[in-house]
Length: 151
Image (cartoon, rainbow, N blue to C red; front, side):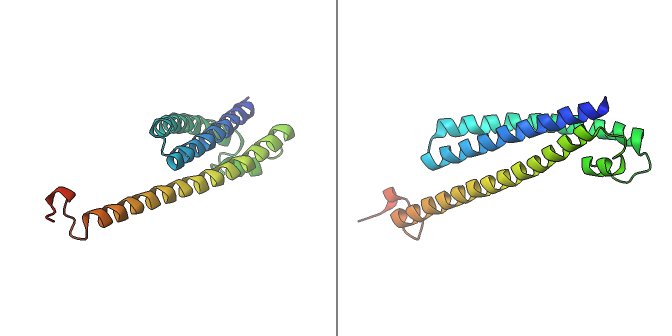
């Protein structure tokens, strides 16, 4: 039974990461298009998804703890792959293969999310630098306000 529960939590994690990638890309489009409303919506969605991922991670940790005590209490590993390696005979081969496939896809999704977040960070930094340069040009190097200038 715990094997199916583990598979269900990994499936949930996979689905949540797909939604997170979509939200990160939506945030990127909002940043590029300077769409404040969609930006706040994307950030709110991202926060909800991250909260759900945290809950699923806790569920998965509890299931892994149960599986570890059931199959390999002396094992040092507390990861899915570690438990799969130590209990290969006890697990259903179909579930084991599905878990391995999901873990591979989760890794790929996580890498995509990291790349998209890095691009978002770059967009924000470039925008901030552009604004600072514009203020510099308009206000001058002394950082005086436009109203305080004497002509």
